[in-house]
Image (cartoon, rainbow, N blue to C red; front, side, top):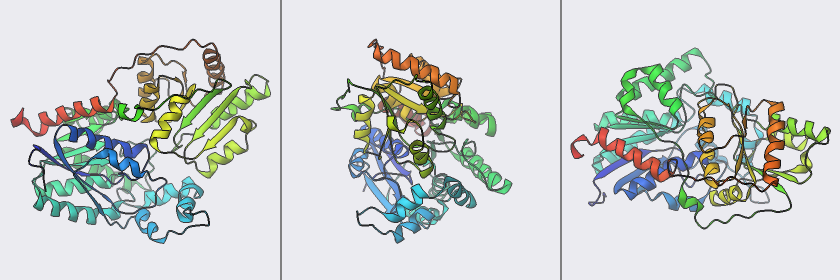
Amino acid sequence: MKDKNCQKNLLLISYFYPPLSGPGIQRPCKIVHYLRKHNWYVDVITVQNIIFHSIDLKFSEECNENNLYKINSLDPMAVLSKFKGKNNQGKNRVENKIYFKTPEMIKKIIRSIFPIDDKIGWLPFAVRKGKFLCKENEYSAVMATIGPYTSALIAYLISKKCNLPLIIDYRDSWSSHPYLDFLSFFHRKYSEHWEKKILNSAEVISTHTKWLKESLIFKYGKHLKGKIHIMYNAWDERDFKNVKRKKNNNKVLFYYIGGFYGYQTPKYFIESLEELYSDNKLPEDIEIIFVGNFFVKIKKLIKNSKINGFIKILPQVPHKKAIEYMLSADVLLLFIASYKSKGVVTGKVFEYIRSKNEIFAMIPPEGECAEILRSYNYNYICAMEDNEKIKENFIDIYKFVKSKKYNNRKIDNQYSRKNQVNQFEKFLLKRVFRDEI
């Protein structure tokens, strides 16, 4: 039942939600947490059991939703979870094979076959549950965080059936996504049809970048401008509480934390360091540490490189441990491909900034992410594919770290989760609760 002391009551549709773990799961969890701090009542509908690369049970405690409803699905990730088996070490054979041994090209083909996306098998179960909950509770609005994009369609159908204001939150682009390949012209037009229909129906739209806001307005009409609020993925001060920096005085540590998706790759970075190594210009007191779950192709790239002796691969860790690694780094590595990625802003960049450590950003130099980094005086920036500039920046940032002349950066709260969600809530009050402000 609803908390009578709460004034705003929200039904959130989020396929990816704790105890699943990863960058994409943080956004809905943090939104829920900070809305609850402002006396919102929030129920969440998510999927029950799916094949996924990582689980973090402690992460579930951070969200603080009122009720969490886990429901069945017939999407591929849910169906395959029924056939899980374990090896002698207790690790899941099916999960490992699907996530890290299946070539990314095959996965992209499988995903692109379905209309909207491959989570469409979740729709009938989620819509039915949403309609039932609407009868039991007086919700003020229904919200979906996307991707997957099926979540937006679910929230749209519930909003129409239950006559509720619709809120759409983009943690990733939809039809404008630079890494999304459509199987056919029909698939693209079908997605664009539904995206337009849903956005026209929405009372509030939040985007994770300035670029996406501008893109949606350009593609679907200027009438959307007043509906759209930019809510960056940001960093959460709570995650940095009681985490200590552990510096290694013997080596200069370069950390990359996260996965490689789409056109992201460390290929050019490794090639550049191989060239420095062949020219006897690669410093001997460096260590490059990749932390995350990586596909076979990436592991082979690293294993077969000339500089594999300088590189460590560590498995994905709970978010708190990842923050510890960020704080312990001398330099944090960032990769964003140049292809159609000027508007890509990875979530980790804000946590990198909050760490106050040096950042070596191999990203579009004129993109939105570079603009944000430069606003905090991070200037070691070059294209991910620019070998010559990578070599130059690598040596320069190494020398800067060795000189001990660290920048004393002051970090404001502009890109904190608390501030970003607080601003989002103010926008909601203006758009959805006009009579209460």
